[in-house]
Picture 1: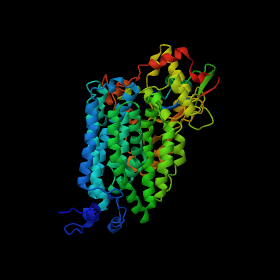
Picture 2 (picture 1 turned 135 degrees about the vertical axis):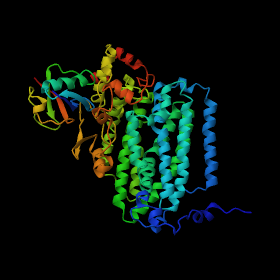
Picture 3 (picture 1 turned 180 degrees about the horizontal axis):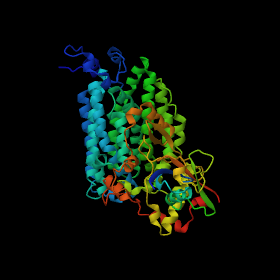
Picture 4 (picture 1 turned 180 degrees about the vertical axis):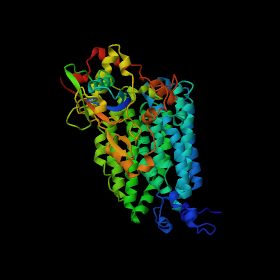
Length: 86
Length: 500
């Protein structure tokens, strides 16, 4: 368990945000934390979609149950949060 | 006794170079302070200032200018222009004074450095007047808002802003330290007077004076006109300095200074002037959009100045012009959303009529920025104002010190421009900001953005209230919506335009 700051770049939002999460969080948990600061604030909800996480510019998403500590993501790296089909 | 005409004595009187005998030339004019780039002194002596004025002429004109501005202020003190002005206009005044007044004082120090270390006598002469200009600008722009401080303590930030760690004040200090406080005399001539003043402030002040007159604030209009006429004179210090550098084989060095300075000036004007023109200025008083203003003055006018001097357009020119379409809209959204972190009350500027104007001036605005404003508007309409308040920090650019942001909604193009240097990960708003860092990493590497300071534990408690205290924002000073959210009511009758 360790505090792990990352940068949230949320699809359809206008700004990069500081997102303090835990290195044991799964990608779904990280995505939920990112959504808290964007969806319903400046980004309209998309109820039929899930939010997937990827490195900036990457084609592939991280597995939804993968823990942050297992991804090789560095503190303060920018991650993209993308609406995707469930 | 008959007096000589100015042109009969001017060249002799300002030939003030001499041959030092007690110290060496290098001790008297160290390269680190002159920034002469190895161009010998005799080459600098061809510098011919385009605007000649004698000291008695200067004093007489400045006295008239001061008398004019102070007379208008005195005459209109009881006119209730301030009380009757749109709150958005009052916000422009607060943002302007806080961001500019003490910056003028800093500019006075920079002009003083040119007075002492300029290699050309003509440069030193012009900078002497420039130094006095900037001192006057600092004083007059502190005195005028002082009248309003008892009515609204946000006006106290005219003097307070630069003494705080408020994020916009950090951004202004970072840019001005880089452009002219921590630069040599030659660099100041190029970066402050040519790039910043000729390119941006001179034109900005012309526009601002016209806007003030249009808004009925003749006190501010006369103040700004009084300053602008000084700017148009001392901004000409840089042109001849560039000619000396270019004609002595230093074009590449000169070009780099110009490119860095224009990029930094653009960021400051984008966040200060863009939202002022397109959002805070009441719709009925808008003459042209910020984009039209930039196209006319920067692309139409300043571009020609660069080419006439023998310089190239900066490598990023097209990228900067592309930003005219969106960057200030993103800054406006950031200013409004993080409004408690400001010393002024930003106007949202998104009534149905304003949005129609924005869509006309910036086709596609409704599908991009409009969609984000739809969510904000919906929250305010439906009793969820807490969702329009910040809960975390935006990531701040390691160059501009302004949040990294771009287009939301359709056309989403927000992106981090990272750089790893000596094991530290830096973040930038664009290729342009990152390029500036790469030109001199040692100059910039140790600065900590507000977010860096937060992560280093310098902001306690580590939450929004701790951040506001760190920024010295007291109750009664923190920004809120300029119109008390009254603009939202129009949407109870009409659906948001983006939904159509």
